[in-house]
Length: 344
Length: 283
Image 1 (cartoon, chains in turn brown, red):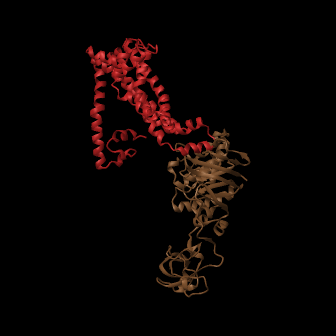
Image 2 (image 1 turned 180 degrees about the vertical axis):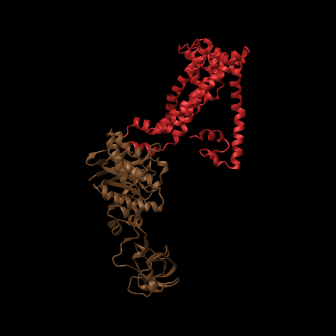
Image 3 (image 1 turned 135 degrees about the horizontal axis):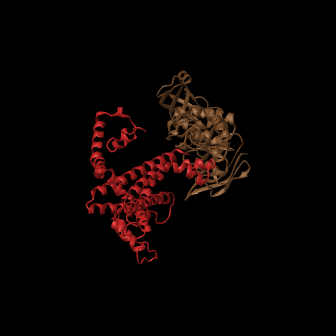
C-alpha cells in the first residue's frame, strides 16, 4: 500500500471536516476521491501532502510514517486547482524549480526539464511565461513541475475544476494516458462523478467527513453501499418502496404481472437517442397491493424513467398515456426508506 | 519598454493606453494625453526647467563654485548619505512590518495597523518635537542624540516609516497562498520560498516605497529643524542650506543645489527601477 491513512480526524471548530477516516491506496493506481463540495475530500488530500495537519490519526507514505513530516520531506507532488504557477518564472524554470532546490547538476536539470516538457506537450513553450499560456497548458505545466521531483505519490486537487468543459474532457483522457505511461501512484480529488468513473481505477466516495464506500467504478455503480453513493454516482428515482436508476424501469402499456405500478405520463422529453418520461403514479389498490402512500409513493414526486427512443416509439407513448412500471430484472435498487446518511 | 515613459505621463487620464504604441491613440485619448502632458508640464517640467535655467545664471564656474563650497558639500553628503541609509533600513523594516501585519494574527494588530500612519498624519514639526522629547536633552531613556548625525537619521526614519509598509502590505495580501504551498511541496524551505517566490512579487512594491521614502528623506525639513540643530558641517541638511541661500538673496546658488538634488533623485529612482526589474525576473 502506497498511502495508508489511519483514523484521521480533522475539526474546524465544531465542524468535522474528517471524522475518523481510514483508507489505504494501493501503489501505482489512479484513485479518485469523490464527493460533494465541503465533504472533506480536499482536506484529506491536503493532510496526505502535509499542507494541513490532522487533529488525530496517522498518515504513512510508502511505509514511512509521515504524520509529523513537513510537506518538504514527504516527496509528494501536488497540483492545485488554480495552477499555483510561479508567475515570474518561465515554463522551463517552473518545471526546474524542484530540481534546483535539490541541487541537481545543471545538465541533468536541463535534460529532465526537456523530457518532462515533451511528456506534457509543452516543449515549444519552454521560454514563455505562464501568463502567456491557456488554462489547460498551465495545468499541464503544473503537472510537469510536480512530476519533476519524481514524487512517490502525485496528488491533484480538483485539477480540472477551473477549466471549461471541453478542455476538461481532453485533459481527463490525457491524464489517464499519462498515468499509464508514468505509473506513479496518483490520487485526485473531484466532485464530478463522470470524471471519477472515466479516469480512476478506484474511487473513494467521501461525504460529510466520512468514507461512504471504496471500490472500482463498476462496483460503485452496480453495488452502491447505500442511498448516498447510489444517488451521487448517477440519477436515481423512486418506484414504490425502492430507489433505482431511471433506465432500470420497464415500461408497459398493458397491465402485466402483479407488482406493477400504473401511472400516467405527465412529461415526455426527447434528448438525443433517449426519451425521458415523468410518470405520475395512481392509487394502486385495485392491483391488490396495500395502497398506503408510504409504499407506493403516491403523492410523492413523479417517477422518472429513461428509455431508448426506439423503444418509446414502439410503445407509442405520448403525453397522457397510461403506463405500467416495473423494476427491471437485475436492477440495482436500495430501499427508499433508509436515510441517505447517518447524521453526524 | 521604449514606450514606458509616454505611458507613464498619460496614465492619469487614460490608463487603458499604457503599453500601446503611438498608433493606438484615438481622438479621445489624444485629448487625454494632451491634457495630461500640459498639466504635468505646468506643474513639474516647466518649474524644473526654470530651476536648471536659474542655476545656470552665473555660468558654469558659478555652478561649480556653489557646489564646491565645503559647507554645501557637507550638507549634500549628509543628506544623501543619511537618506540612502534610511531607505535601506526602511526596505528591511517596512517589509518586516508589512509581513507581520498581513501574515500574523495577534492582539492589537488592528491598532498597530492604524498607528503606522501616524508619521504621515503628524505635522513634521510635531514629529520633531515628539522625537526631541524621547531622544533629546534630558531623555527619559538616557539617549541624548539631539544635534547629532543620529538625530538626522532618527527623524528621517520616523517620517518615512509608512511608505514601504503601505506599498508592500496590499501586494502581500493579494499573494496566492497556493504558490507557497506548491513551492513547499517541491521541497523549498521557508527562506528559499521567501527569496525565490515571495520577494520577486514584492520587489516592485518595495522599489516604489523605497523611491517615495528616499524622495521624502532628501526633502525633509520640518522634523529636522528642531532635532538636528542645523549645525554647519555636522547636521545641516540640504533643504536648510537651500533656505539660507535664498534668505541671503542668492537664488542662483539655491537653484544650483536644487538641480543637483534633482539629478540625485532621478538617479536613485532609475537605479531602484533597474534593481526591481532584476529581482522580479529572477527566480
